[in-house]
Length: 506
Image 1 (cartoon, rainbow, N blue to C red):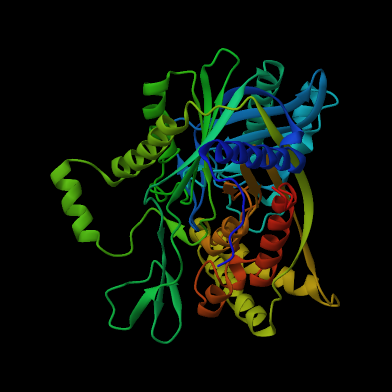
Image 2 (cartoon, helix red, strand yellow):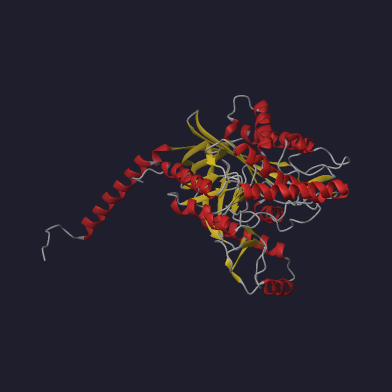
């Protein structure tokens, strides 16, 4: 065997190790850390509770809430990177106790912010929903929504609530922005089983949302469950924890059928964390890719019911305990790893996604259902509250079929945001994005952690290819403006932007 004559004493090894470390740090600086800048942080909250009574959104039947079991909140965190007095980039996160974010609501909020902060780039505002099904209706016939209810005369107009929302949230953004100061941030991850895949697959290849799993022909649950809980923590210049964001791949719909205003599991989560960290803490709920998830388990229900009875706890208590425990354990581990000078970048883009094409058979089916609903309403107007939303849901398919005629490749414009915050990537999408897509993004990302935030827009489902093949609610054409082909385009472009923030040398 050939042997070299290199010295191998301990002193030489220590010296050589120092050279390697120095070289590594130099490469890191050249690749990304050279872009590190001072971080300024601001935080505020807004009460977005509606005046009662109010029509609720989230079911096919109209529900009017006369009472509120919890308030609804919007949490705001602003971030700015600076070199000296020079502003480099900004981001405004707004997390809302709403079911989705219609484009009209987003634009009304941005317009209101521009009035309060002239010259501010309102396109840097990222507004997301927790998907509670017990929050106000946000669109009506006047906006020609594809999913609307006939609002009773004694219930305030939808626009009345949107105006209240825009004013209060814009005020909170202005407050957070004007009070921002040097701060620090850190991040961490944990695991908590909150969301369950809710699509049952049967022997014939069909899939049913919330389908029975005790059938002899039941085969499996369709997709993956993402139990990662990613958290960001924000401190002010005095070292006080002022905000945290918690990203859970499960929509807030434990109480989805109720007829009272309710923020679902995020309200008791906030209360529990504020009890430990103080009333100033702004807890922002983010929902990861969870279009095929819910907090309702598909099997083992009897065992869960027994444990709840013995522990004298409800299913909601269990959900809250899991989220809070994950956030607190993460905080305890990473609280001393704070960063005030980090790489920070925010890219926003209008992405063209191929639309799901409506077939002639789908057109004919939707037309028949819409006509049947219209006939039932005409025969008995009292049924309109139960059938109107269903009629317009199928009616939207007819409009899309007519709109796609003569277009070779119809496209759907969708706004995305992609950020680098230190070692973390944050990316958004407007959909109820099936979990498989979120896993693809996280798995291919170069970031240490990747936060996926869904429902930063109108919120139609975006199913995977296997979901489309199985059919069922959430994967049929009535549920989707964009199909699996568009989902892959979204993944590929998001990953491309994320990885562009981390040059290969790093």
